Amino acid sequence: MNRMTTDRTRAGTRVRRPGRALAVAAALLLTAGAAGVAVAAGGDGADDARPAASASAGEREAAALTGTAKMFRKTTEDVRFTFDAHLAAADDKRPDKATGTFEFVHLDKPGGEGGWAKGRIDCLVTGGKVATATGIITETSPDARMRSLKGGRVGFSVHDQGKHDRVGYSWAATGGPDGTKKLSKCNSAAPFEKVEKGTGDFHVLPWKVPYPTA
Image (cartoon, rainbow, N blue to C red):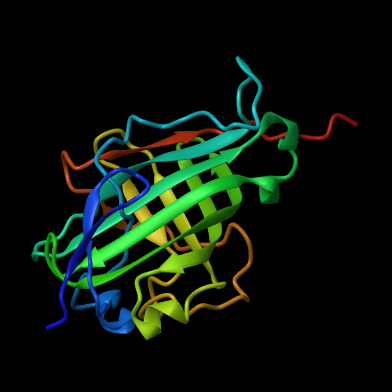
């Protein structure tokens, strides 16, 4: 077994990054008989959301998705998502101008083996307490299979229900992210995953749709 090293993610959580990540298809597989899947790396400081730098002081953002949490599992798996996505008020009519970051990690157990990825947000749409976002993967764990995902687009969805949030992702029915560049912006699956109680929280700022006036 390769030697494991400990690192600190941007979100502040200490995560053991394996020298040899598990194959993504196996680590992130979701089938009818098993609840596999992805997530976001990060600490439990879901309330540490920061306002978008592009929004001036006191100005309401057009939309936002922030927070981190662990997905509910009946196994030892440690699956987390972290989002820090923002749409500035000045870009109210352009969800594809959203900025920010995302992270996800899937370990076989806390501190165990697995894979992780992080990237930049390139689209964000929110309606009420539901958000859909996409982003480009820019960094991954060192495993060759994970490295092949760099440059690909992935999608996420979140339903902000207070202590009962849900999460979805674009690869829910395909066995894992595949590095595709063909996924449309702001496209994802419905938020079907449950957040494990007490592990974090997500916050969605509703987009006030700029309906035409004439």
